Amino acid sequence: MRQRILLISYNERLLIARRVQLEQAGYQVYSALGLKEAIANCKNGGSFDLLILGHSIPVGDKKAMIAEFRGSQTSPILSLWARDEEVADSVDYLAFSDAPDKLLKNVASILDRRAAI
Image (cartoon, rainbow, N blue to C red; front, side):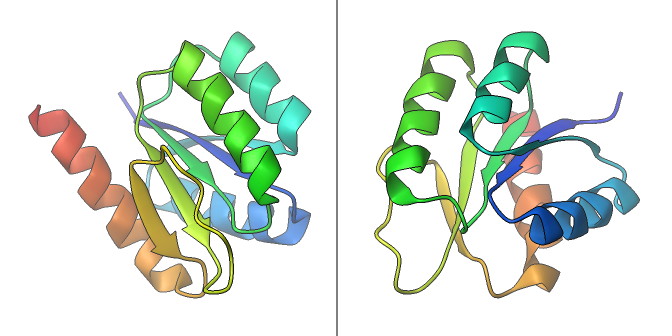
């Protein structure tokens, strides 16, 4: 069974590009453009193996999403962030958003660790 990823962003172009990249790597990707869609996906989409928060999400909304996810999901959270962004608390992994070629490596590493547990 393919691993399920919920990908959230406020930038539609980046959301589509990352989704395509992850799908081509064999992941089943659910995407959400904004806070409301992300929360709806968590409530209606079941459980996910990984949640990815894009760097375009404002820190306040990231914190709200993290709080919501922690109440309904046990999956790890990867937050992509820009170098000048405040880091949101309670995420499991951080990665710079300016390295799209490293996204797949980060995702594979996280999911491999999770599978080994």
